[in-house]
Image (cartoon, rainbow, N blue to C red; front, side, top):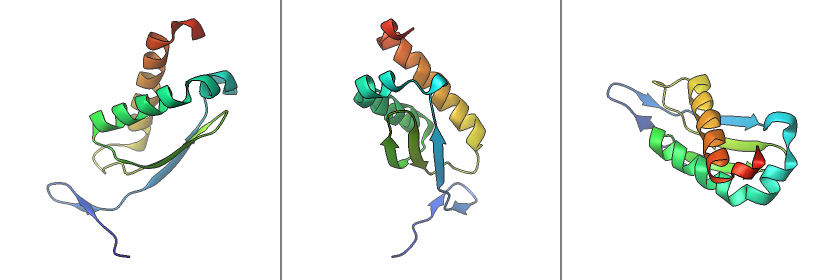
Length: 98
């Protein structure tokens, strides 16, 4: 299988990051009840930033996500964006969770 490289103006890259994170206090209720909504929020936010999701799994108390983040964006800034905006979206659409 040939590796497909992505490109920017002056670079070719092949970056894959396997990121695992959990919600505050590992609240299991959120992912059992709102699993599909949260997955949709992640897809939408990654699309806004131009970061393709290669694979993702939502466990009862944490999330596994495999993404290809371009070299112009740091992993920590992307994760700060993803976790911050997704939590705002969750509490905006599901205000009873606060």
